[in-house]
Structure formats: C-alpha cells, structure tokens
Image 1 (cartoon, rainbow, N blue to C red):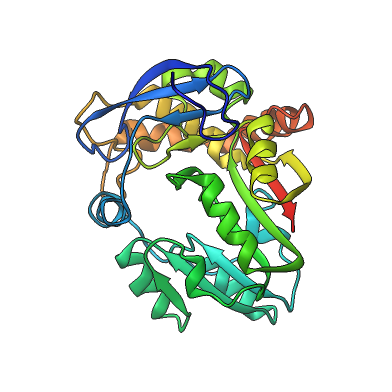
Image 2 (image 1 turned 90 degrees about the vertical axis):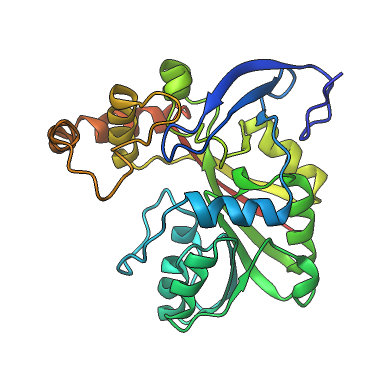
Length: 294
C-alpha cells in the first residue's frame, strides 16, 4: 500500500506518467495521487547531491533586474525591517528587494550557478539543501518559499525544520502551484506546473493544511493569486509541447522560433488577466499563496 507523504492516508493510485517537457531531462516518472487529500507527488526519490546536480546541469538561471515582486509571489507579502530567510532564493532577486526595505536577509539555494550570481550581489547565500542546523534556532521573523516547497523531497520534514528557525509568532510565506486548479484539470498532461522531474509535490488546500499541521504550524490564510503571464505561458506551452527527449523552444532563451514569437505576441490581447482574476475570485486559480504561523 502506498501511503500519502502528506496526510499519511493509504489511498494512493497512479495518476499519470510525466516527462520533462521543458529541458529534456531523460526519463519518465509516475505521478501518484491521494484519494483522501488530493495531493499528488512524483514517484522519484533523490538525495541532496542528485538534486544539486539536477539543477546545475539542466535548469538554466539568469539574474534579473530587481523589481517589486508580483502579488502572486511570497516576497510580496514580507513586511519591511524584518529578518528574512529565503529558501530556494535563486539568484537573489527577492533578497535584493527585501534588503532595500531594511530587512536582514539570508538565502539558501541548491543550484551552484544561481548561488554564484546571488553572491556577486553581496548576498549571504548557503549552497545546498536547507539545513536547520546551520541556522540559529528561532532567529527569523519570516521564512519564504517562493515556488519552492514543491521541489522538496519531503515537504513535511522541511517545514518542521523551518519551524525550528522561526521565532515564536513568526511566519512562513509560501507560493506553490494549485494541483486542483481549473487550468490543471483542463490542461491535463500539458499543465505547465507538472514540470517533472523538478516539481516533486503538488498541493491542494487540504494537503497544505495537513502539511502545516504536521509541522506544528497554523494556517493563517490560503488563497489563489495567479500571474496572468503564466496563463499565457500555459496555453503556448500546451500548443508547442515537445515530444519526449526534445527541448521546448518556449523555455529556450536562445531559440528564434517564429511560431513561438507569434504566439507570445498574442499575450498582449489581455484575456489572460480577466480569466486569471475570475479563477482567483473562485479560488480555482493556478497559484496558492499561503501564510503559516508558528
């Protein structure tokens, strides 16, 4: 019997088979689904070294220009002048934003290339997986996970570790794809956020609540807030999804595909904003933003 890693119910079954339809990492992986809480997870077990290698070899990163974060990101909900730990900080865009607002900042990142770019900005970044033992207990006001919790092999253990480094009353702010979204149901295998093998866990409201409770955290708020741009990427991704073993030209910055360029130009018609707003009002948007409190 396969047990759900989030709610521990033994009612899991095979949902579908996925492959890397962005960066062409070789292989195919089984997605399992829990009948009790709706959680889905990839039947893939990687150690810290394998995860670091996966991102270093197959996940391209660039440093963007610092800009105020969108409301769909965890960073947008961090108050000024607090002590922040950003787990999965990438090249440090959010940390630069927080630092400019008087925050004391530190990051954790598995991708060595992203770490180098972040450190070049003068940021304190730990390379590797999040290790609570590397941090002073109860030393952070806010811990952010911006499109990160879905990458953890064991989200509950990670949240328990975060609990130990949060001060009493401190907050975890996380953004993660909504596996029960309307777009996920319509897109099926072509849902942009399956993103195998990088995304390992896919949450619902119920599974987020179970994960928080098991980690000793209280759910303050869970809502869907979706960037319209991602709905644009979704339908372009669905129309141009490559066969297994081929790299997507949508996600290749060096590609000069006229079909992709034409489809991207249609994004300016603006329908994605209206649809995203409607789905979020109904709680069926593609992206959760959740606040959990110690």
